[in-house]
Length: 131
Image (cartoon, rainbow, N blue to C red):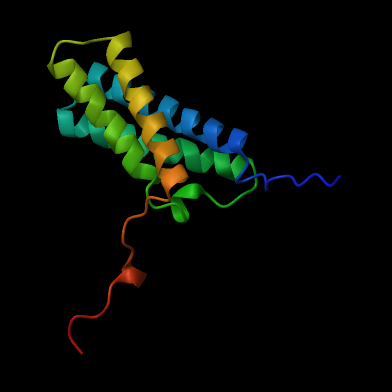
């Protein structure tokens, strides 16, 4: 019997851990930005920047190329989580409820993006419209 192991970057534990880390950084960024009195756009932007920066730093500590350089639906998950936090706050959910919603949306969208191969167009995908 031969056992085939998944590559460390594609192992389910790595993917789930990365999604949870992305959510933790996005949620922390949204909370800090809200406490600082930043606008709704600023809350989403700080959540995304904090999440992407935290994920890139973790990848560097693990001696691998940051996901953000290769997985183009990575930051979008943090944006959607930040939007969920803002919307939750707007409709009256505050504190831990808004934070849990932000984290859940971020994790779910990241895992769905990996599972279904979601990608956004890149510059290499675009054909020159004028020749």
